[in-house]
Image (tube, rainbow, N blue to C red; front, top):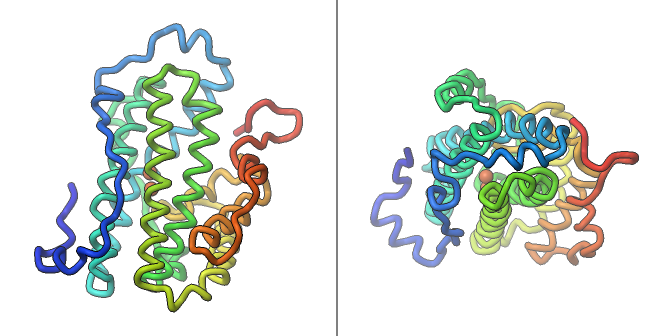
Length: 279
Ligand SMILES: [Fe+2]
Ligand SMILES: [Fe+2]
């Protein structure tokens, strides 16, 4: 599924940037034939099971949208640096592993077949138009990627505590790997900005403002991988986007990092009078 994005000579040129990758094997964690023991369905609160199913009905396919973004970015490969292209293959490999991991999890929890999931995915309409201002060039794409990946880190961290941890160690382990992988993607994008685009660092803060403004105005997710949290803003504290923007700035050494107690709120916050975030 992954097209090689770089000819050999360009690989050699990109030796000074080696994207990191968290290595793990899906088949060793959640084999295709895995079944969740019945006791977990009995013990998990009914609302947790329902909400987890609903959550996965969206997250499964957003991970699959990575292929669409990858294909789009490769169609603009002439504009991109060797380092950027070198980062894309391991990134896609991880995201497609997330797609398959969530498909298996969703199948275990609902019984929905893989064929049906394929059908649903094929019917999706992907639209880059609403986010095109963020896709101007490699630099703006990398800042958007940082914002999106760190948002996923905190969002999956919340999901891990609220849902994945109720259904046995295999499912919980998937949640842990998702958090870790998205963190590595965030970090790779940061390193590439610092390496190739340091002369544009002053643009990061206004661009983050633009991203937050756009996400707030989108109201829905347009299935182009970026800004998929637009569909679940009610699950997060109102300052979620501002705080993750600060984490981006801190990673690029442009600002101090937010306090740990503030960051903890990103995944521990609950709406008033509720033990978990509703749908
Ligand atoms: Fe992912
Ligand atoms: Fe990611």
